[in-house]
Image 1 (cartoon, helix red, strand yellow):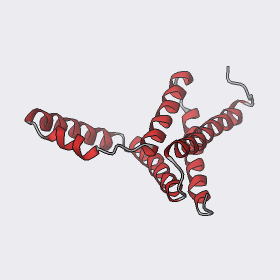
Image 2 (tube, one colour):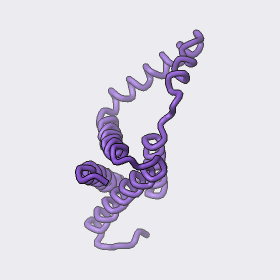
Image 3 (cartoon, rainbow, N blue to C red):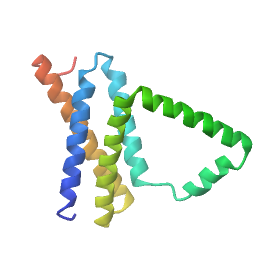
Image 4 (cartoon, rainbow, N blue to C red):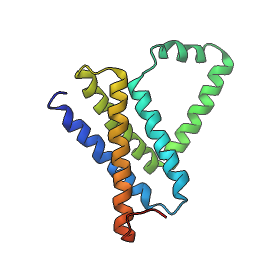
Length: 147
């Protein structure tokens, strides 16, 4: 791996560490929260590692009919309202995606294959979110075990 790749991977770790810290502060059932966080991390790592090669045909197929164009306009308007209403959540997601994309670009420049890129992205992201959540939990409660 190139020497400069460690900067983006460190940024990825710190970003997910902060996300794990903030996620652990919520007063919601932790099992559901952590399940959704881990699932979204794995989906994002997979999306960055295995991009769709026929994205253009997929999008053009959606706009080829009137019904598809209408549904995409309604969904786009809904997404715009959600982005404006929950700007803090959107900004957090955008930072996580940006850090992952930067790390993926550096991994791609190093010449690694898709599966190895997925493993590196998923491992660093899950380690960061887990360590951030565990340290926040430990600093709040003084215990090392979730119960």
